[in-house]
Amino acid sequence: MQDVPSLPDCKLTPQPARLGQRLFFLLMLSGSASQAQTAPTAPGGPATRWAVGLQAAAYPRIAFVNAYAGQSQAAYVRPWPVMPTLSYRLEARGALEAGLLLRLSPTHTTSEVNSTGTYLTTSHASTWMVPFVVRAQLAPQRAERWQLDAVLGVMPLSTKYTEENTFVDVRTGQASSYGDSRQAYSDLPLLAGIGGAYALTPHLSLTADARFAWSILGTIVGRALSQRDDFVAPIWPALSAGLSYQFGKPLP
Image (cartoon, rainbow, N blue to C red; front, top):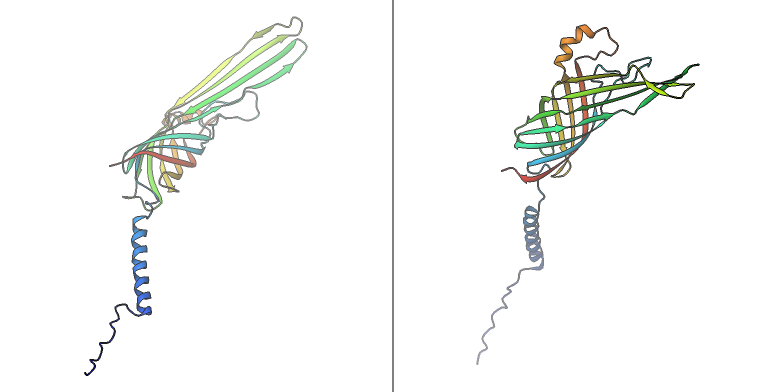
């Protein structure tokens, strides 16, 4: 009986080189899909309703009030150099913001002694400013991490200066008040400028503002006070920089 030749063995698996190439290709596709699914959100993150901030502020002298009497040159009340802010976003490109600048100068006392007694002069000054501004985003969309805003608003301010004079009689030791004085100044300057932000995370940003403040009252009375030592120009620059934290539900 004649032997029937056997069929050649069927090789159902590819060659090792081709198998490696296919596995590498599949791994690349799997890695790309996984990276696309787990990619982080945009650095700027979605816009949220609320934000709180803290800025180091440089606002120059703002009132016609001397801080201390008897000094060789006028000393002006200056604001506290740290400004907390709170903002509420109306829409993706607009927000309302309020800040607070406060300064309570330390009590300053001078004395003068003569044969009749001691003359004491105690002075104290304080000021507060509340900038209310509207922020309008200049770019149509947040450009990666950067944002640029136009800033317009008003800044109510009030400054008070109090001076108390006391005489202590050297013979009786009794103290009596004389010649006390109080000065106050209030204004409502207009604010205009630009503001910038750089997103460190979807919620935390570096912020900076450059503004000009214009006092209408200072413009009106400027001519009458132009020769006084405590006169302040009606227009002055203001700078601030700090951090902002965004929170709340994202805007629709």
